[in-house]
Length: 374
Ligand code: FAD
Ligand code: UDP
Image 1 (tube, rainbow, N blue to C red):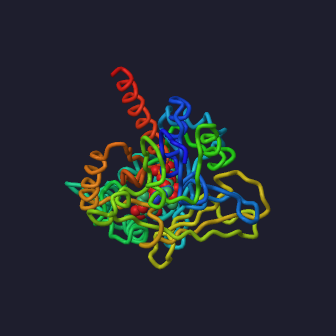
Image 2 (image 1 turned 90 degrees about the vertical axis):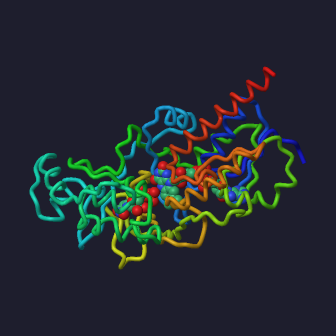
Image 3 (image 1 turned 135 degrees about the vertical axis):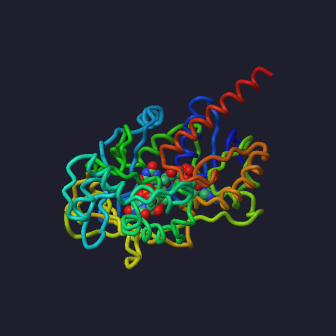
């Protein structure tokens, strides 16, 4: 078998950004592998049997405040401006989430006219928590128990299989509370979808004569056969070390995709279902995201699950402590760089992974310069 400068495990954002940088900037010879039969990792999209674009691993909406990340990805794709909006199905109503002034007015039949009115109303309901630690504390401190129970408790219990009081505050802190009527899910500076989809963007990133992609290839099965100077690993860190300290908990999802025989299924890209009476957490309709014109439409229901692919690292202090043990091992492992959501066990969005991979490249680049001086 040929010799490579790098073996990159995983063709998601982490692996693909590093492959592109190393091939173009260092003229490195790279072998990339993924156990799945496609590139793109969890951001992979494709047309379904009816010709409608959908995201195989659930809806992926690109948003970032980083000019560096946005400019970098813009080399590989045109963009379609898109601002995601989400409605929550609560008390037989569809109201905007994150909670904003409209949510309060519609849910409680109020007539809050200004930001100050809404801030005052929320302050009257909020229950101050002195030491905010958990995902329950964050929400109760901001909006009080009734709104917490309506929007957050059931959704979180389904999504994570844990009560919000058992999860780090960072999880529900992803969802802000607003006193204005901004009903966008994100407020980042850049919000857009790759004009021809994520997969097309990945194919452009990886289109380089020095990059060889081998799909359907599990690292565990080929690691002893590949001759590479350095490994970049973006799979689960606990798996790399044969679960030496025990399994890191991950939460999974089952995606149920379907085509609906109507031009539109729902008003917005995603509808959330906080009630525990419904087994899924949300329904997303891709045509809102992609702008595709088609006489039918594609949707995905997400059913949380303990079994299955590791999608979400579970942010809790005891899991972080276990990860720290793996991190120390990873740091001491010469010739292997760990990068990405699974290898660094962090609940990161796509743009954060691109940022992490670009920073990793800068470190590899600096190390190479030092080596050349020696
Ligand atoms: P991944 O995309 O998981 O890639 C890792 C790759 O490694 C996988 O393809 C896997 O098959 C491969 N691999 C693992 N082990 C092995 C092995 N042993 N051998 C070979 N290959 C292996 N982010 C956003 O910014 N916006 C969103 O709207 C958004 N929505 C999301 C919705 C869902 C349901 C999920 C799960 C995530 C969402 N994300 C979103 C997060 C986003 O998916 C991640 O930030 C990003 O895809 C992480 O990239 P990565 O390269 O680190 O990992
Ligand atoms: N969340 C909730 N109700 C909602 C939306 C979110 O309780 O209507 C909580 C839930 O714990 C979820 C977290 O906030 O896991 C983060 O939500 P986000 O939409 O960012 O989740 P992701 O898209 O990463 O799955």
